Length: 168
Image (tube, rainbow, N blue to C red; front, side, top):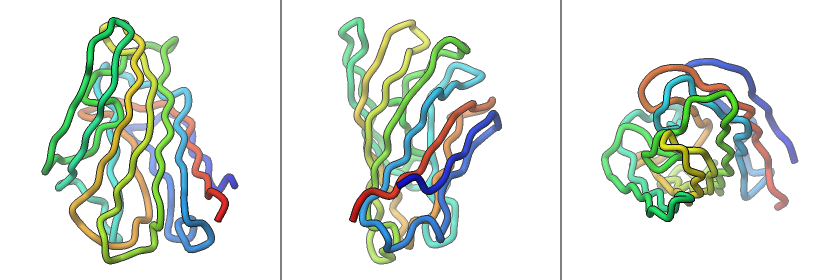
């Protein structure tokens, strides 16, 4: 069930709220389509838990291959944000787009760290098609209420983001 749509061009896009993330659904999905960054860099996100946007303490992994056969992987702990694009730079080109699906469950739980994961396809700044799986969590606990998607360092993001509640 479509709960929210956010689109346009900005330095970041936030999707979700306490009213959207509730006990109506057990599982949720956020899709990003036609995602483009104004400067070639990684696509990142931040989570809001316990009412605070978390800008530190992310553990993450992203793993996948480019069309040139190169394995691209990134893993890190105690990072300031989580990667969707595996630390690789998305090409900054209006003709290229990134698409992703991010999944998470039980956002109202306040006692454990929320682990999220998904899949992404994109054109790298080296000109190769890439497909990655990714997962991340923030070391803080609290109800999960929002995600902020942004370029890893600076510039703008153009995107269509959709939040879905999946059948209970």
